[in-house]
Image (cartoon, rainbow, N blue to C red; front, side, top):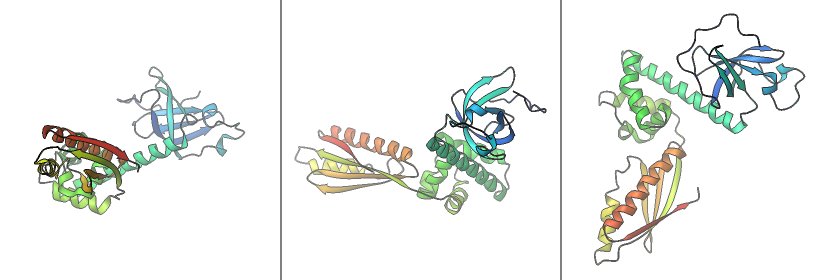
Length: 266
């Protein structure tokens, strides 16, 4: 395998074998393609023609194009040769779509941090340290955090100092497309005491601001309650609903009652 004539300096960070990465096709040869890893500065990988497609290939350029952005799986890493072997065939269409979408969202979130820095006349390093990093500690990704802020406003700005909040909320609501996902639970609650109804109201009222997410609790009759949580993505919604369910069950147990939950199909 021929390597690029101008080998980049060894990067600080490397991907892991088996990891799915985002790549851009830089150069196509008859027997494969050189690609730059978009999430790892300075790294170049190679996709052998046998890993370009599962079908027989007569002309590799019918299957891959220069400047094309794809998702590829890391097959092998040789640190001594600064070489990475990649595969397109190991990545399903669904995985590729999710990987590329997450990459686009990540780039979008990074760009908005740069916009925030320019608007507030602050160094990007300051914005990253005081805004981006605290949000990423609270959420699965920076984009997920911005989605939550676009939906919930100030209450979603967790770990951020007050001076940033109004600007961050305004920017998120102006620039982030919100596609809400919801999950539901049916809760059956019983507290067999003279003050059982008051005990149930006490527990459910205590959850008004918990867990700082958009949720609803509606009484259906006969001791049944419908719980619904809305969040930017299913993962966040599921996590919030699980916390809500646990709090209800434990709260009702303290009131000498019983609560059971059953997930409702999406």
